[in-house]
Amino acid sequence: MKPSTTKLFLTYAFVVALILFGIGFILMPLAINNEKMIVILTLIGGFIIFLIMIHQIIDRYIKPVQSAATVAEELAGGNYKVRAYESYYGDIANLSNALNILARNLQEMKIQEKIQGNQLRTVIDNMESGVMLIDERGYVHLVNRKFLSLFGQSKKDYVGFLYYSVFKQKPIHKVVQEAFLYEKKVKNAFTIEMDIEKRYIEIVGAPIFNEFKTLKGAVLVFHDITDLKRLEQTRKDFVANVSHELKTPITSIKGFAETLLDENLSNVAVQEKFLKIIYKESDRIQSLVHDLLELSKLEKDEMQLQYQRIQISEKINQEIIPIIQHQADKKMIHFNVEIKEQLEIEGDLDRLKQVLINILNNAINYTAKGGSIDFKVKQENNYLVITVKDNGIGIPEDKINRIFERFYRVDKARSRNTGGTGLGLAIVKHIVEAHKGTINVTSELDSGTTFTITLPKIKPFKDK
Image (cartoon, helix red, strand yellow):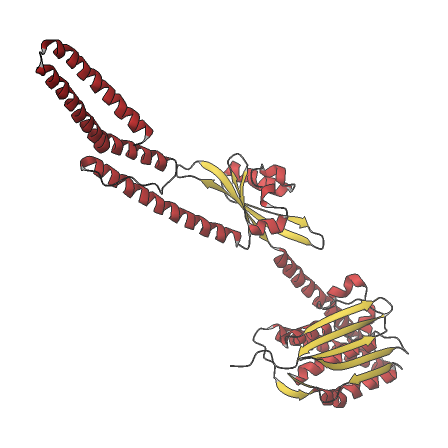
């Protein structure tokens, strides 16, 4: 027995003993001789019978009720694993069974709630947008992994604090205030200054209501729109650059054509000079349009390379070196070639020639008279490594990561004088990446530049 049940049993036993003692006290004076012994035995027997009855009553009725009460208290406290003893009889058995069914149902509900909570937490943590949940008083209750990656620090630095004490950005304060004030979705944007770059963030705040339409808080969603901003800026720059690149030759063509039409030029030499300028500028437009079409074709996902097995060392010596050597000789540049024999690669021959000619032409254009260019092709494991090193004007360190952008020129005046369109390196980068290769640049201003191209010797993905 439990202590409480034992105490109750002893109390009842004590009461019965007192009653029987009182009966014996009354009967004993009335009994004579052997009758006294009979009275004593009867009282003792009655006391034993009463003890048995009390034990049965406690065991069958009081203990089950106490057990049911204990189970109910445990359930109320959140312990859904507790169970009532079921080997009872009558209504008590029904009560115990009902409590056990309730406990099992609550336990299953708790398991389901935990599973759903874990699923929800997993979904929120793996969202591509940052999420913050605040209550009606402005305290932060939840932040996800993406949010922490955007703003830094850890969860403990946000959860439990007022939103305006953990954010310095005024647009966030404004979104929260308007979401609470107008009780509707609100949008805004702001920037975060990172160590290397600036991040553009769009914030959407939405109020949270309960089933009684009472405002209970707000959810803030932070979208990183840096890539969209960068893409938008790239598009604007592209339009501006194309317009600028076309404006100069078109203006020249129009001006010289008007001069030829409006003025009676009898000097054949001047006419020829003007016509040559018109031809040169139209050729420049044609080159620009050609490179734009090439770049557009390379950027399309459906662009297919014409893979074939190439004796690359032989092709370079026969089809590329003579062209570049001629240009180098005109500028009195020392052109040093080091190519291992019998080098093979699976790739698109025309595209690879385009890459090499473009890189080598750049080296010649940006190397002063009397300079030198080192051109090396070798094999490293299963890769072909191509290196073009010059001792030309070089590239400032802060501009190296931009040279593959369309129309970007380090020295704009010199680039245009060389006849470049500003798209060559962008085309080179796309061709190399289409072959699943890499291109790296190291440079020092006024000391030279080195381009290193690494290409897999075997086609990375076979056609099905």
